[in-house]
Image (cartoon, rainbow, N blue to C red; front, side):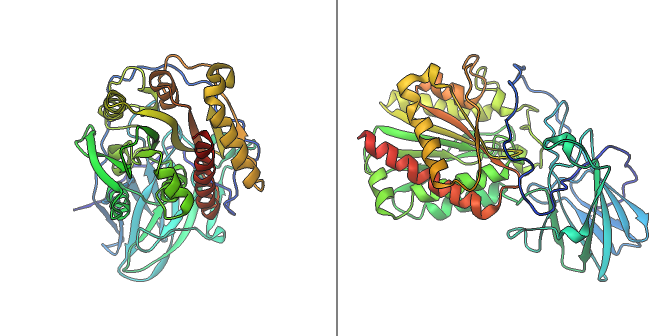
Length: 423
């Protein structure tokens, strides 16, 4: 399927942090979340296919899991302008993009990145196979209309231009690494080769994709840890830290084996499979931010997890810890304030303190919440309805990937130590 589009005139964006350092040290976090309706709203599903240009020698495609490209124009002299729009509005400024480009003849092209009602948040990643990504060389990146301030969407460029070398082998250009539902399921299945790990569906998404849960259990335990990730599709760094966290808890170390002697682990690594596979900026196919639906449960994805937790509690389970992994402008912890949780929530603050002591090289702020009703967000629902100490664990968009892996590992080890001391 081929198509040529002649549409493009909209404000745009992309990261100026060429060296991939966090945008700001000491990021203070976002403000109070507004209470919004989570009844489904219309979503504009993007056209998927191939755009062809220059007498059918240059090609762009969004036709793969997590692809997002809404329009391309050829401007002459090997210059192209891409348009990225959101699934619906209003929407958080997380302008996800992911597309492939190739040419019948080798050449260098310039791509101008433009976005709907946003500025540039994500620094381009390049891949030859869709599995292994590296940041674009900074010499091939140019900011247009640089922003002001130290962090956030106002601090990044309005638009950017990138130069890439293309030939007959397609290259991927993406906002973050690609972890669509197929790749995530393959990861779960690779862990499930261990006899104490199983995976099964707990429900279906709006578009009938599987809500897959991974269970780590070695016996008839009635204490458990609950972990979720990717409520918001572009938040890949949170997923990467979660991935390391889960691999450590389900690993072969004596500490992990002892943890599994006393606790089960339940994981929903992809809370929003429709949004991820459709390349959404924020929402599910119901047009809703899932992390605002833990009060009314109007969306099937949150309903699936709610029903699972209720079922497990009816079987006698006690949930001792809950974590929801996300991404934002820099690493930050969002626990519930100890004035509300008291001694029950002490484990969360001890955990944060222990991680910080082991990883002093990167400052991570803490922003406790004193409001737990309406539950609305997962952390509040976990605590209010299931009495589990819980946290939103945020990782920076540009936190170095080796550090994400280390932080996930350290977080798992410190949690195991704290739970071991409780026994």
